[in-house]
Image 1 (cartoon, rainbow, N blue to C red):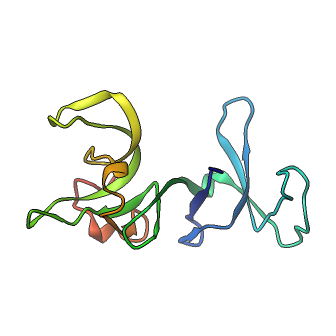
Image 2: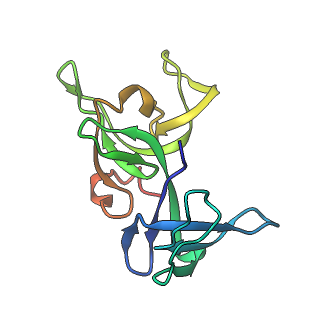
Length: 151
C-alpha cells in the first residue's frame, strides 16, 4: 500500500487531502515542507505539470497518516479521526481518537508486545474498523470529545 496522508492547515482551519510532496530535513528527520496540488509521474520521480503547486513550511500543518482501513460506511480512517465503536450487547462501547501506539490485551492490561492503530483508549482499530463509524476528527469536532480526551 502506498502511504497516504492528510494535513490540518492551521492557517486556513481546514483539512487538506491534496498532499503531493512531503520534504524531510536530512539532519533531524522532521518534516520541513509540504507541497499541495503537486503531481509526480507513475515512477514517483518525474514531475508532470505542477503550475498549480503550493509549497508551505510544515510548521503550519499537522500531518496525519491513513491507516489503510475503512469504517462501516466505507470512509477512510486517518490518524486523528474520532470513531464511534457503537453498541456492544446494547451498551454504548466507546468513542475514541485514532492514534498509532500500543493497545490493551484481552485481559485489559497495557501491552507493549504490539504496535498498531489504536484509539486513545487502547482499543485496536483493526479489530473494530468494519463496525465503527468515523464521526469527526480532533481538529474540526473537538465537541465530540470529553475534556479528558482534548490535548
